Picture 1 (cartoon, rainbow, N blue to C red):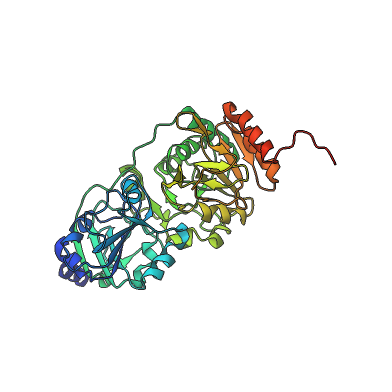
Picture 2 (tube, rainbow, N blue to C red):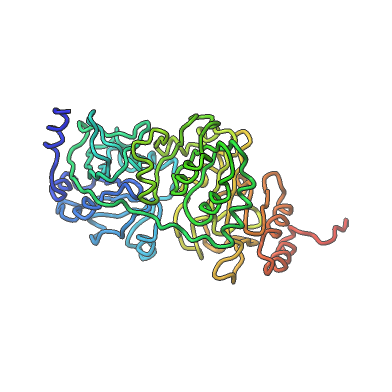
Length: 435
């Protein structure tokens, strides 16, 4: 430990000095929030050498730096409330992706990225943990030209393949112990609980879950508190997973790829979640090109994949990332899991959404997606769609059968209109007459 500590002290510096290691034209990669390094981010503009550089961020917790895009082009991998308006104003760019592809996409852009990340304190063997956010960064470490770390005592130490950076790999580090970004606990509506109950009835004892954050996923977890021996294989570790562990609902007893272990690639939630993760060997944090690889997902028998969407058309196409034809978020891992779950034994893929939007003034079950909408999940990969009015099992159904099933779970105020649109599109024929 003594040698490692000396090496640590040699590399310990100030944020201003640390960011000077970035040379013109190099591309900087931040982990997904809350693995972003806030002090390093703030110091980046102090590097006067910047010219033609890029900064890649995913679900950032703060807005973009006030710096010329000619010096530093800022790129979002998944929009959040912090950078959405800046994308729409053209101030930042966007990199299309499946979550599983992010490491290879970034390496295609630059063979040797600069990694900046918040990490847990160094252990006795000289290793730092990427904590909440191995995601795509874990797969880039071995390719990195420069590694600059922000050591935060509140970043949980987590375990998993590639979820370590050794002090010998580090070029510079700073210390900054601050609270990690947290997500507020969503307030559940009656719609959320209706959807949660429907999906809860799809989940069986012994199943393994992929589930994310937000009000609908939280409602699902509320409605499965009576289940037994569930497993978790998910890109994200949500806050409410702690409740499921403490109640003995999640045991991973039947998890086919990792018995007794919860698998994830990033986490964001409350301080309670971060404390639960710290030094918890039941939690394995792996790179996203491992967790989200459809090949690996296909090995998870009895997987229930739960994702949300914005609108679904009669064909089963799901737009889960744009609103009114404008990009709102990203594909994330939805396509990875909707495709992968189809290849599992007894896998069930669920897409959930409210039946209406804009205070019940528009239907989210539509005859065709809004102009400019992005297809996140294709008609060939969709399985089951759930609203507060029920579930529509689309897999194995024709277009006309899909239209009927989706109209049945639309808001009652829009069903007559939707049926007429289906008739106009010749998807539903009121009377069949042979000519």
